[in-house]
Length: 501
Ligand SMILES: Nc1ncnc2c1ncn2[C@@H]1O[C@H](COP(=O)(O)OP(=O)(O)O)[C@@H](O)[C@H]1O
Ligand SMILES: [Mg+2]
Image (cartoon, rainbow, N blue to C red; front, side):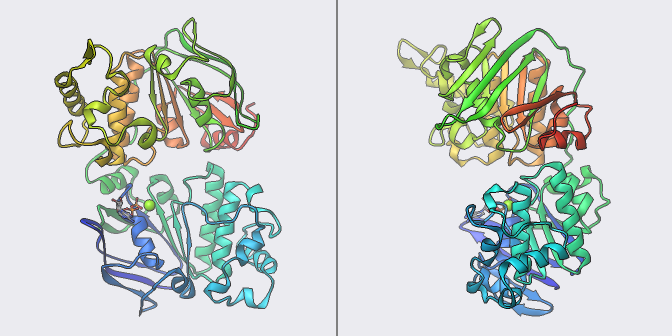
């Protein structure tokens, strides 16, 4: 199926999310749509899938103009979409999920002639998907759940498959398997559109690349042989360095020591299960792993945000488990939370106030109960300058900033304090390549100044760029603490639960 988008424009209020975009997807090709966060990729695909109505532009299927009022129309035309967040019913079986909603899209093809289970088996074996139709979805690993979404589209006779950031939740091995499946679909003549911001995968999988920046096509028919740095430059519009310069580590004394730390959920189940490690001054310990293996709870426990935990955490000689978050931060622990929107900033406060969030009632920002706003504003303005926050002034409200700039504000606040430990959770999630470069530099700078740094990341490129040592979390435990010389394959195996040798 040849799919052509011509002159698509989509506005949200004043924002032009898609600005006169034209692109053609050919059958038998994997077409990567590459662009940084907020470039307009999902918007374009939602237009194509009938979820959004464009303000201008046309869609052609095999040369014929089409208008999709809703996804049912797109599905009927042979377009399937695998969303970033799966849309499966967890307690249903694979077959039940595939059957679900089939009527509303016409119940054609496979599903008319045979049972859903047979359809799953047939599609599954035809494309090497290896999914058991009777398995319950919630028991399946994420990578297999994603295949269920693909099967669902294929049983509806999709000729074009759109995958929106399909590898964001996968281990390296699952990613490889997915790419193999996609190649098989391509070879069977399907039209594949893969949305991503990951340069490595684009170069590995794509037959052709279109780069989108700020709602516009900035490069078309780009070859997958193009270097990562050239692709990054196209995405961002300037040269960026993809790997931060990292001087030799000058490792000092042990600063943070964690011993048999466990964290429990309300039912008493261990989400973090007797984890022990140490971090020394001047080193970066990266905690790698697939999302949801206890990393978030571990970090929450370290900074005193989790009520149900056991074990010991020491900062130098002082036990800090059981201490309040405020006290832990005051003792020199910097914290960049995973969810900067909710935990890192107060959106309705100006930037300057966010820069002194936990200490606004203390010296030097307040004296004798009087808040020194002039001083706080000056401090805010200085940090905005120093951390390259793109905002008009320190008066603007935090909520109005983009993700990358919000993250810079959190980093600026934490790093302007006197730190012994910096704990950064997913510090670059959702950031564009340019902001990632900046954040990585700040983290390495903290390491150079002798701070003991913990970075939690699900992105292997980030782990390799920053880590002096890598602790891999799997199912609440540390599967191994390894040297960053470890291969991606071996690291991926640890992430999938293999035991370090
Ligand atoms: N429903 C919406 N309402 C308002 N703004 C939106 C909506 N969806 C997306 N946007 C904005 O449109 C721009 C493009 O978003 P999106 O297509 O999701 O980017 P990408 O998928 O490339 O990360 C962003 O600035 C985003 O905030
Ligand atoms: Mg998107």
